Length: 428
Image (cartoon, rainbow, N blue to C red):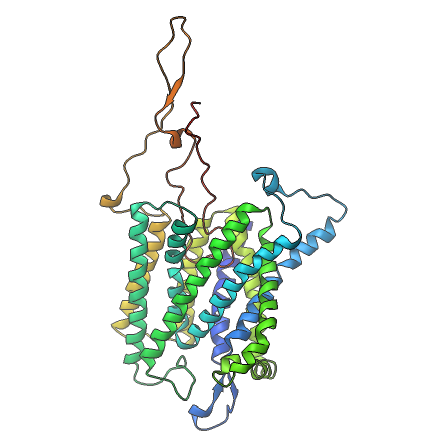
């Protein structure tokens, strides 16, 4: 058991980093006219829809350990532990179709992120995804009635500034490069490099809104019904894949507008090129294991540790990208990128209360209240008690707010469970 947690941490870090790197590697593969002396006529793999399909197949693989457990214990009657602990009804039958809603959000967000990755360096892409904490935090306040402390609102502002600085540094770095790099958009109608990078960052930012809505929907479903997270992820993958199959006849009509919707061409580009096909298996496998490791870390350690690992994942991706030559250090704009990333890390850690907030944002010291007896009757009996702070007396932690990891993948630890309500009429 002593080596199990480190194994989960290393596994999550490795699979999470490799998933983003494999996706970027796939975008850089030439699939048509590769021997043409004119680089502008070469065609690279730009199929975000097929990359989304790969992700959903990886999520469906989460069914495998569940099916293995059912077969192994088919003679036992399994009672869901969550249903016993939280007295939630087990999810059965058509109710599993509720996961179709977050699957639609996941489909939209993942496709937008894959498009954004075509135009941005993989480290910028990963750093921009750190803005997820902002959107989920705001939506949790609006729709889930969560409460944020002043230092958490300040942390969200810092995250916004960090994303803006990272996007600016990416644009200035592209503009400063004297020769084209491997990460430029592969299109004959491409605009200036710096404009393309900013557009890519915007695609990733809009994708985080969809991901935030997905997490809010998942939180509502998971708090209402008792369902294993692996089963939930598997159904989202299934419904997402079915959605793509249903809308594929419609997307074909738009293939003249963009190669993104030319599914037949994308299929042949994928299966006829061994590097693309091999990376497709790597992407599906890594996202499946990443979900498993991420949820295991949340269960055996904490969601906070998961947030720290995701931060380390961003650093790992950046270092590997520099080592592979996919990105370059351009002074002084690379320092601006480091500063923006530092703001993202600081804002995320401050939001999750991993570091102390500034003195002017610190909440007043909490006092532990107890039930105070009122005056006694003449016979010595206590007539009643007065609870000066009912929330504290009910055991409600003042720190139990919408603490969020920066990039939780497909986990369901995005928002904390609702705080139990305290009956104002209670006197004990």
